Image (cartoon, rainbow, N blue to C red; front, side):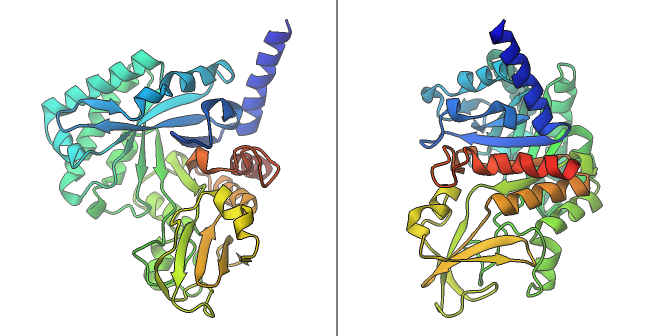
Length: 361
């Protein structure tokens, strides 16, 4: 009896935590996070990263020898409402080749369907980074044909997309919206090795120092507006929360604010949240940017943009206010999984849920 009571409580707790909002997490093979570390009641969807699409339309499960696919599916024992998806990635232009050929498209659909049936997964995610204008018709055709097959079997179809929803990135947004169940906007890496100055790599709002281009495209607020204005219903849109930071080398240690000049990236270039908050960073100066609602820290010529539980809660609450579907993260293993520093297990994932729930009250 106790076993069934606990299962019922787990189910109810999972429902309470996420309610009607989507909380997605990409799981990539990680030494810091075993599958047994994942709390399935803090998530509605988990993405297995990755499955490679080959030029002949065959698919290859990455890290298959590690035996991670089936244990992920077993998380449904604790949360029967949990959805599991395979995330597909490119292989030297394979998406372009497969999408452009009707026979290869049909073969890919068949191969993906067989994967879902074999492993008891619930859908396919397209992480095509990125289609071009030449792919726009074929990408839409690929999604349409996947949708026609999947809807018959109640399988999900999602895509991870660029924050900028232009046709030059291969997006016919109204067409995509017809076939996708979730559009995961990768609202991170707004600043990186390509940048000339510092900036929050996942800022919620623009900075007053931003150029017109940056204000229009390089923040979460604008990404939601741009995708909605391009034709995507807000209830399909999900905002990405990075569980990692971006590091830069300042040109001058005395100039360490937003929009100060940089000399490329520092190492590690994409530190995990745990790396950012560990004791090696204890001497760093920590700054809260009120305009953009995010953090950065600096020491000498090293400058790091990152999120913590406070900024994550604010982003989650903002997403509720905006009426989008929910939030997701890349990736679960970059969190303070065991609460080593913060004292809270899966600190940022818990903050995602806290932000959603507090905004709903």
